[in-house]
Image (cartoon, rainbow, N blue to C red; front, side):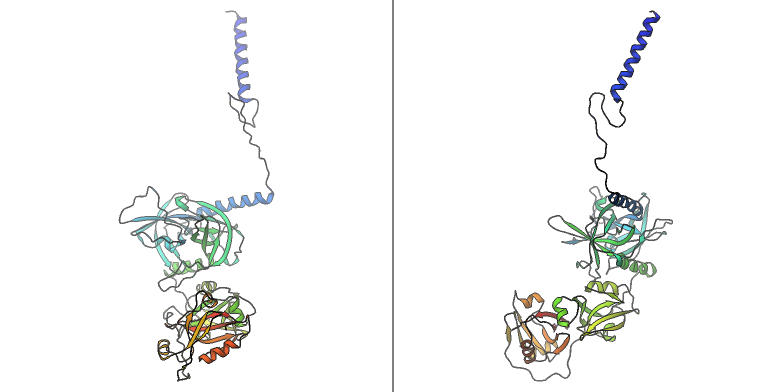
Length: 507
């Protein structure tokens, strides 16, 4: 073969290689294509978000990166399954499909928040309750695994503290839940549905929610939840609700679902949770102080009857015999509007603020009474004896028993009758009128008036009026003006007392 022939062959091969490379790459570095087609994929962004949107997106990412290592995965082995809740649910007890179950043990999962560098972790009581010995396992975000021990738990707030033996951990920053506002952005960080280190976003939907899910054996519970629409599911319990500064503002605790599949989450405010956690770490338990009163929310009718300038506050329905409130001069019918200089608008809000204090500590209460504001300092007591209620007695009552016929107020829907000998003995009182009938439905029934109770006092425009006889009641009712609101104070057969608001005309 001649040199010319060899050279020609080399030129042809080189040309083919170069041509093939051109076909594959099409001389383009910005688009992808296949050697056997002309298909190209566009990778150019069709829209550039505003600086504010990009900043918010970056904030979500930054906060998630900071907080995720501060939230742990908790696995709990118990001896017995739990009873499900029908509407409000503890969102944890996620059971993996491949979990090994037997008749003696069951495993559930939840979340926890690292609150100290040396291994103290805050979670929900319902996550770790009933755990067997060495049955609590904590897994960190970097997959390190520890056996945890229970330090303490508080039934009234559903807060618990556990401990692992480790140092140098990334502890969460605990914010100020009193500064939380409805509508602000929040992130929920936890381990829902067995999926570890999950972050969801939403807003604060409401504050100071009472959903009636936490009650101890005496029927007492402190609920002042932060409500959020950030997605919270089984496994999130004990996890963190954080603001856009990366601070924990709540401990995710419960969810509420509907038949439409809509879910709302509820978190214990961090100010309450950290007070409880401190006491659990120090003492292993939280001893709570009590005023010794039974309370109700104030609505428009109640406020009008009390002559209040605002329609917010808490009504003192009754007092515990020899309790802190009674000793401080609190009276039934008082309206509490501030605690330690901060407004209170609902009963659960008052319970939460007082519930952060111990027996022996004091609270300053601003009270509306008889048309003006007064201040009372109350030294809190323990819970012993709180279930006993002061009985309403009148030593100067009339001895004679009325024989008048019952009087019906059909427009509002109830009937009152004189106290006969049997009623006097049953209620241990000599004055008042018996509510012998409440029609259903009626305005009286909707206002909460109950058949079989005794009305013995009324409050009109902030002034108290004793109701000793049926004649007293008839005279009082006849003197009311249309659309005027009044409060009737009642007693139940078991000694409890309270107030029910009604609006005239009554006859």
